[in-house]
Length: 310
Image 1 (cartoon, rainbow, N blue to C red):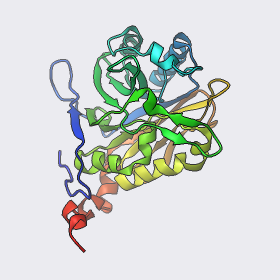
Image 2 (spheres, rainbow, N blue to C red):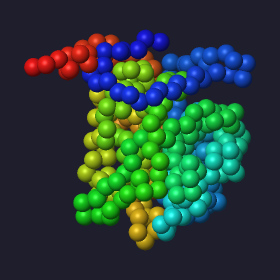
Image 3 (cartoon, rainbow, N blue to C red):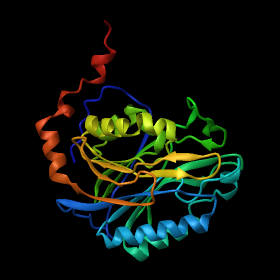
Image 4 (cartoon, rainbow, N blue to C red):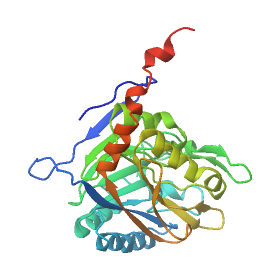
């Protein structure tokens, strides 16, 4: 695989890549296109209820022929009260994640589980972890959210995610039957340098952006940011979203989207607040065509260009 290493900026992030293979150790050959799905849901402070919703959506996606289903951030739990997420946080080998691994295996489908409350290094912190599970029910890769949401939303609430969450430091890409996946979570979307790294240093073809945008920020920026990331990286973007009112204090914008490398929306629910899935095909020939006709990878200036004195 040829990487475009003509980077604009230099970073010190660690980098992890996971190769997809069969149980026999053979590489997975990709078809010219593959069907994927993205979910939209309203998670609540009940693990069993959320698992039931996810189970139904997995069955729906599998019936539609999807080989990958992407869930939004906080798919398994959204707390009503401060500290609830810390109380239910578990290691990846705990019963919550084991249930989702079984769900993937039973339905023969890959799952992108963005924003799982993984137990942190102490009782006061968790990790906001994006977990990728293959169709055998095995965890293929994990990514801990790098950019934490410490924001005073205009006209909305004040958030301090860093008060209970440990920030990740590793960039993660995963080889899969759906292309080379760049793994991110929610607020990461506002930092284009991460996506530039995923595309131009690590050759990502599909960017995963599970999220729980607020209604204020979602209405103003959600679609614009997603389409910008797709256009500037020439990647598919799969953005599964939390939607609607979780409790009296929290509401999410919704509008789950699948966007192609030209910036065209190819998957979207008719109601941005409803629970359901949208389905689209990842077309690898389109990725190749867009990149060949507009070779921005070759045209990018090297880091030395920007570091030279004026």
